[in-house]
Image (cartoon, rainbow, N blue to C red; front, top):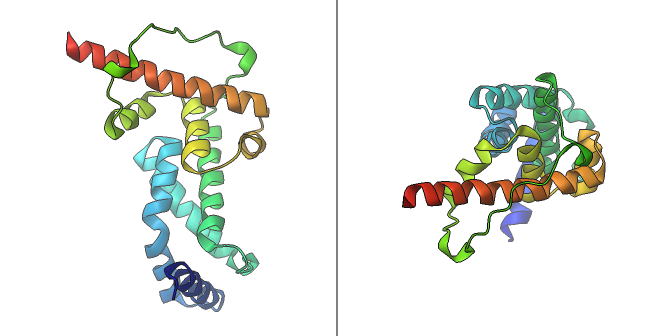
Amino acid sequence: MDTKIEQKELNSSLVNRCKKGDNKAYKELYGLYAKAMFNISLRIVNSTDDANDVLQEAFIKAFQSIQKFDNQAAFGGWLKRVVVNQSIDVIRKKKENFISVDQVGNLEEDEVEFEEIVYDVESVRESMLELADGYRIILTLYLFEDYSHKDIASMLNISEGTSKSQYNRAKKKIIQLIQQKTFSHAK
């Protein structure tokens, strides 16, 4: 049997048990999804404490509304949406703003030989942590969580053009940060 089918059946069984109030099923679902959902939130909120809070709140919300879950969609996808929305709420409460396309000038573009730069996972991850929240959130939602710019715009109450612009600026900023680190280490 296909492992995806087996996983969906297991999740469906756990969800049905949760709907009946089975505490053990709640714990099993939490165990299956907590780490992945924490990582999603951490990439968005950029704070371990906030990500832990988001994780707890998201699971509470999901379990409180599990009766509404219809088992047609994947539970993980449904839960991911709850985590993403909860993470965005945390950012909004901190009053982080998304910069409009019209409010930002062009990023400085250095002439650099790209062959000289090593883009490894760790340098990209470190550079992402340095991004402004708006850039990091949009980059995360688009690149890692596979949301469209239209969906991101809707979630963040921004225009689709702003989402695309901030995504492109985030990519350029990551390249710029890696270039700076590469050349500062080479000196």
